[in-house]
Length: 360
Image (cartoon, rainbow, N blue to C red):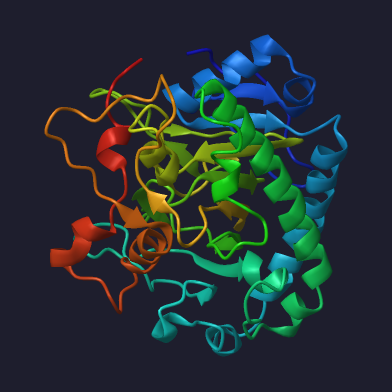
């Protein structure tokens, strides 16, 4: 796989990402070239989705890309203000008792491994269906209520870019037109959400994963980071964890479990985790901004018909068929400390075993 281009770009006001740590072999793709129908860029895109399931998407030079970059730049300081609220105030918006993954998740309220090690981050999830009026509105702190128009703009543009990605994959997979996008309609009930993550720097003598190794639950993830800490584990028995270097002007795109299930493993949802930022960034507070695209609630996660390149099931193989909504709830809530048990750990897992197969 082609390595990402060497770059020394860093974000203003943030310590530089070190040049002496292993970085992941993500391709750098141009949204502008893809939109313009560049065949070579489109082939590189499909290769990235099959080989690693992660790539950089350069958003500069297109109206939608520039809009998303601007909205992301405005949302980061809103997230910072939210996390300045007292813990007691934020906890009012934890809806776990209602078996809902929207709202607030506090520090050390999820486990990152089968032994029950606690996580080291907090995050806030905002439902697409809430913001767009598809579902009832969830209670939210004033900082988010007053920024609903900004969140809506970010969601609409993210969803539009995700739809473009899905349509591009649809064509490469030789599926009937609209097969993938019809399972991810903007105004259909589904689990799409925006997440803002906050992680404090960890003591030098006590550093662990802030978010344990996992695959994403849904279809396509759009991620913005300004500090390092995200790591991916490339496929293969001898693979080593590698950092994903944040790049100005780019989003990190990765595929989720639904795309693995839809294509019987042809596309990859790669294992990743979040650790303390490297080098001079280690003592900085880390924020992430994410848009998770997921299939509509009533979509069955199973191999899609109508493609001549999606592998058939092996003889005698029985695939698990599960509703998207059930899959997401199982995965999203299964690691919360109030629901976790060693016995149920495997049920909270995704397509990790498929992700580590070596096919490169």
